[in-house]
Length: 87
Image 1: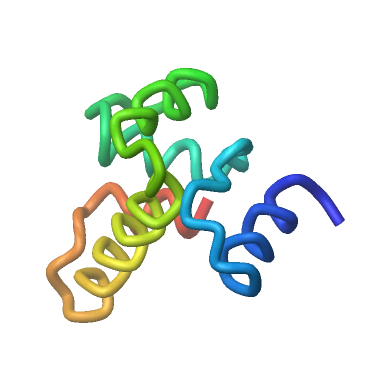
Image 2: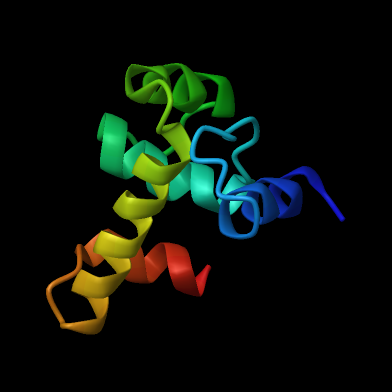
């Protein structure tokens, strides 16, 4: 079990909405596009950006992911997302 799995468990099972300590490489690329408008960014930059949602960091990031993937399923997702998913 890695650090990303621990974060998912803290959020999903134990309802820790601020347990954002790690960003996996594939998530990092998506968050960099969504939050910073860049093709990639270091995990530390994304974690620093998420500090603005203190107390709710992981919940906010989860909502971003849910929203972008829901848009994709409805055919309204960003074009760059398909390339990242297929890579």
